[in-house]
Image 1 (cartoon, rainbow, N blue to C red):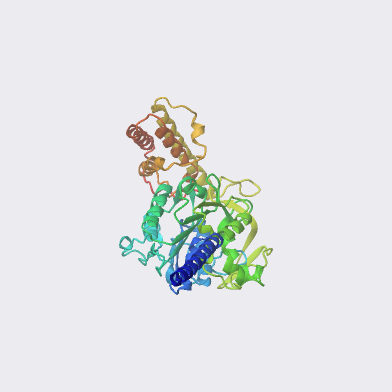
Image 2: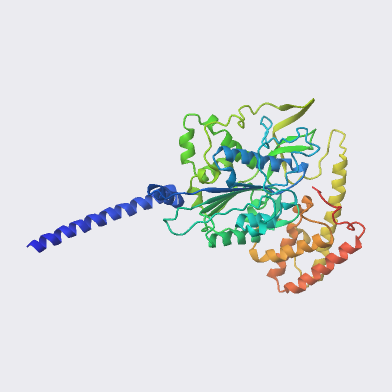
Length: 513
C-alpha cells in the first residue's frame, strides 16, 4: 500500500512537471512568434544575466566629387543620428572619399547639410577610409572582418563580430550596413570599381556560414538596388535588406538647388533622408509615447513607414523576414525623445541662408524637387542653352553610346544563329541569375581596360546592363563561353584601337553623368 502511495505521488509530480514544461514550451512558441527568435533569445539571456549583444555599424558613401554632395551628406547625417541613438563611436565604421566638405565649390567650408532647414552634419564625423581607399575590395574586407587585409590602410578598423550557436553565449553582435551611391543592374558602383551582386552575396553567405554575426540589416540606396538581392539573397540566413528602389527603377535625390530645370546640387536622397529624418523627428511626432514606440518598434515597422513615405521609387524588402520582427533599436540604437539640433519642424521654408565668414551665400531649395541619380540631358534656362559642363557631358555621352552600340552590333554579327533584335538587349533584365555574373564582369572589365573606365563614368551605368543580357543569351545558348570571350575581346580591341586618339588617355574620359 505504501509503495502504491509513493508511486501515485511520483506520478503526480511527473504529471505536474510535464504540464509546466508544456506550458513553457507553448509560451515560448507564442513569444517567438510575437517578438521574433532573436529578441526571444536576447530576453532569455537577459533573464539569466548573460546578454551582451552589441551592434556594429558600417556607413558607406560609394561616390566622390562635388556633384555627389548628397551621398556624403547622407552618411554624415546617419553618423550623427546613430551616435545620438547610443551607438558607441568605436562601433561605427565610416567609408567615404571625404572630398566634398572642403571642396573649393563649397561655400560653407568644412560643413555639409542634409536638409534645407538643417544644421551642419559633418562636424565630428570620424572617417575611417577615405580617398582611394573607398573601393569594393576594401568594403568587403571591412564587412568580413579581414583585419590583415586592411593593415596600414586608414584606421585599419573592421567589423569584428562573432555570434556563437550555443544559446548561453554572451557575445551576440548585430550588424547594420548603410550604403548610398550609384548603381545599376547587379552592381554597386565605387569611384574606381564595381561591386557585383554575386560578390556581395558570396561575402554575406560566407559570413553567415562562419557565424560572424547574430543578424544583419542592410539599407541600400542606389538606382536598381533591388537587383542586388532579388532572387539572390537567401530567405534563411539572418540577413534582411531594404533597398531604396526595385530591380528596374531609379532611386531619387531630394532638396535640390539650382536655376531653372538643371540642379547644381542636391543635399540628400529621398530614401536616406526619410529613414534618417524619421529618427530625428520621433519625439516631435509622438511626444506622448515616444519611449514606448522606440522600445516596441520593429525593423518591419520601420520598413513600412519608409515604404509609404518614399513617393518616387518602390522601397523593397529582401532576405530573411524573421529579422524584420526584431527590434529596430538592435541595429540603429534607441533615439532620444527629441533631436533639437537635427529636427525639421518647418518644411515650408523655401530658402536657406547661412553666414560664412564675411560672405553671405544664399541658395534656394525646393523641398519637393527630386532628381534621379542618372539624369538625362535637360535644357537650362528659357533660351534652351546648355551649360559648358552639360555640353561636354553631352558629347561624351554620344561617344560612349556609339562605342557600346558598335561593340554590341559587331559581337552579334559574329555569333552564329543570334535570334532577336539589338533593342531587346537594351531592356532592363527581369532577373539576374548568379551564373551570368562571371561573364558580365569579364565583358565590363575588358571595356574598361581597352576603351575607357566604366566605374569612373557614371553615365555608363545606364547602359552596361545590355552586356548582362548578352551574357545571358550566350549562357542560354549552345555557344561556348571561351569562344564568346575570344570574339568579344577581339571586337573590343578593334573598336577601341580604331578610336585610339579618343581613348589614348583612358583617364581623360571621367566623371561623365
